[in-house]
Structures are given as C-alpha cells and as structure tokens.
Image (cartoon, rainbow, N blue to C red; front, side, top):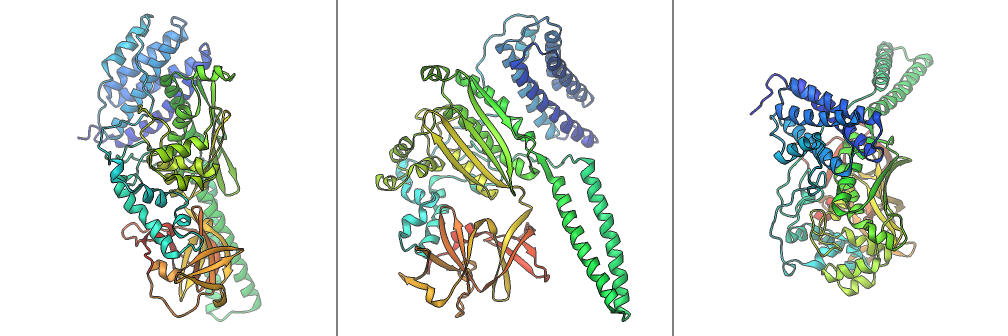
Length: 613
C-alpha cells in the first residue's frame, strides 16, 4: 500500500538529498574515528542527523524521526564534551546509520519504515546516560543475507567440463595445436550446460549481485533514475543546440537556392562549409551530452571505507582503506554496475588479503593494514586498482587447492604458469578457506566479479607477491553508450564487431588457408589459428565466394580469425538496444553513414551458439 499518495515528488527529493547527506555523514564518521576531538566533524554530523530528522518529520516517518532524534542527542552531548567517544560508542553510531539507510529503503518503496530494533534503541539510550554500552557482535555493513540451500554434490558435476568452459584455456585444451573451430564453438557452448549442472544462474539473471549463493532468489535493486549535472554543462548543450538550429536554417536556405537552379561555385562552397560546420557541431553536442552522464567515481568509492572498517572490526583486524583518484569521471550507469564487483574485491582484500594484527607483528609489519582503492584515466579507459599490503597469494597453494576441489586435474595444473594459477581464483567454487563464515568460504564471488566486469567490456588482472600483498587491476571503457567498432561486410549487409576484440586485419587468399581435420586454419607468424566464416557464426547459408578479409579476434585468452567479404573501416557508434526483440548474438544496432542498419554482434554469444558441422 502506498503511504505517500500525493507526496511522490517530495519523497523523491527527500531521498535524494538525505541519501547524499547520510553518505557524507558516513564519510565524516570515518574521519571522526581518527580524530575524535574534531569539533567541526562533530558539528557537521550533528547537523546531518538534525536535517534528516526534519525531513522525516515532514513526511510523518515517525520511526525514522525517533532514531535520528536519539542519535542527534548523542552527538549534541559529544560536541558539548559531556560524553567521550570510544570504539564501542562508534559501533553503536555506525549501527544507527545502517538502520537509517534501511529505513530509506522502505521509503523508496513508498512504505513507512518499521521501528528500529529494540536493542539498538536501548544502546543509544544507555550511551546518552554515559554508561558503558554492552558490546554486541559486529555485523559487516552491506553483508548479504545468506539462506541455506542445497548444492549439487561434487559427483554430480562435470568438473573437467566446468574448467574447460570457464577458464581461459578452454579452446587450447580442446583443440591443441590445430585449434579446431568446431571445437572452439563446442567448448564455449559448454559454458551454459555446465552452469546448469553446477546450479549457477547468477550471470543469467539481470541485476545479479556479488556474494549471492547459488540457488538464492535474485533481488533486483532499483537504480537511481536521476542525475545531478553542473549547470555549465547544460549551458554548453543549450548553446550547441542553438548553433545547430542556426546551421539548419542556413542549410534550408541553401537547399531552396539549389532547387531553384542556383548551383554556382559560391553556393556550393557555402553548402560545403555549412555541412562541415554541422558535422563539427554534432560531434561537440554528442561529447557535451556524454559529459552530462559522467560522474566522479568518488561517489561510489566513499561507501567502502565504512564497509572495510566494519568488516575489519568483525574479524579483529586493523585496516585502513585509502582512496585516491575519486575525481575520475565515468558513465553513471557503469558506476552503478561497478558497485557489486568492488564490494566483493574490498571485502576480499580485508578478509583474505591482509593478516591479523598478531600475524603482522610476527613478521615485522605494522599493526595497521593498508588497502588502497584508486582510479585513474588512461586514454579512453578507466583503470581501477585494489592494492593490499597483506600476505600475498601463493600460486602453488591456489593450484593445489584447485586440484583438491576437483576443479582441474594434476596434468592440467602442471601446464599452468604462475599468472594462470592466480587466475584460478576466478573459477566457480574456488575458495582457499576451509571454514564458512558470514563473508567468505562459500566458494562463490570472484567468478561473478570477473563476469560482471566482462559485461562492461572490461578486464581484470592479478599481480601478487608473497609476503608483500596483491594488486587487482580493472580496466574499463569510459562509457558503454558509444562503442568503437569495426564494420565488416557480408554480401551487401554490414555488421559491426567491438574494436576492443580486434587485434589485426589480414588479407585472406586461398593459398593461405589450410585444412586441419576438415576445418579451415591459417598460420599467422607461426601460430596456427582457426578460421571461422562470419556467415557460419550468424547462421547464413555458406556461399562459394572465398573470404577476402580475416579479422584476428581475441576471445578471452584465445584467438581466432573471423572471415568476411570485406570491411568498411572503423567508427565510434551510438548503440541502440533492441528491447522488445533481440536476436541471439546481436548486442544492438546502429546506422551507417549511408542510412543502412548495421547489426552490432555479440561475439561471445555467437560462439556459444555455433555448432561445428
């Protein structure tokens, strides 16, 4: 039932403003823990709770008002030096902010929030009297509630197929030196069947979240539908729109003149100038509109110090999360999709990466562990790194654990180098922990991190040094709205493939193609690569025409050559999604300069659908 009929706009404004204010309060609380006597921080946090309480009162959210009032009174006493801040009191305060956020979630569903837990209210009242607060078990902020589910027994799972389908060595293992294209398709297509055998649905469910156990019912979180834009950026869009209107009027006038028979050199020169000006203005307008979607990644980063702090407290560790590059901008929609992978990587660094205080002291390290989360722009990509100064990762331990869990055979393991051993942590079911806790040991998570990063056309890599720490590096495009593509031709139809997958364009002649086990292959600088005709990938009938162009494509850790009739250059295209009907293997569509529809191909999905025949 909607408890806010006629107040939807006010509720939306309140949630936007109060949500940002609460995030700011969380950030200031982290600073306050380091500087408990900072009067400016105490005053700012007091005002934050006071403002949230006022808005909640206007919306008649009584339980939210009660909680904010108690917390506000607590900070009033702290800033007046009637109380002294300590770790136990900080736990009570952080628990209160978490409860406020949960109440915001209820308001988001246009429902009045339920009362805060009685124990939490009693702790706040006890703290107000100056008495010591009873220590309660810390619960990590943002922890995913796990429900017990039955999972398949190891004997029910084809672990070899799982390994072959989901590691980067699937094609190499299956086809060896010949790299049979039919076996490439077979290996990739096994991904779906092995997911079903393993019971995993995470990557198949929109809005899947990192940390969910297999079999859990997915809950899709509502994404923010609003965005804050600086007025200067909107002014630029408005100015460019006005200039485009003036250029359009000029072109309309020139068209009338030409239709009346005036085609002298001066008129044609003016036409050429106007078209060039329109082209420049449209490019500038496109860039200006894209900038309105760009947001500083710091809005996402500022959530994680609190998460790291709460998790470290629950594990008895002393961890500080250092942020850098928060001003780096990227597409807002991508920032939202990054949340789950980054949550898991930060939790992973605190839980698995860094040692306990006793372990660090024993090896001569400072008691406080440092985890750094940073972002920077490199060309048209954003690079995000998560660095810890913990124990590092031992490739041989990871390899032996994978063998022990049946994720790969000893023969397979002996072919892997150190970097490939580190990559094994991305296998479903892999975990180095034998015990199950509220945050680890369930063997899920890192594979979903990699899957979610790949969905954003990104990559993730690991560098680790034993005893020194680990580095997880994520590389992502600035935006998914504009995609650099290579335009290929098949007959009269044009197709586009992501330029990020293209390594090289080759000319293909009949003498360069060789048959191995009845399949076409081609040798490129000593490497034998399978040749897959584009017509076979999209399910068209094979033609007798020999391919003229081969595109060397990189798929995971493997390569193949995509054969086509020709190519028409590369371009940066705006993707139009097909919401009502999307054929398999088609990521979206765009329009060519000639006005023709160009299908943008999803290469991974196409490879999973192809059957060697």
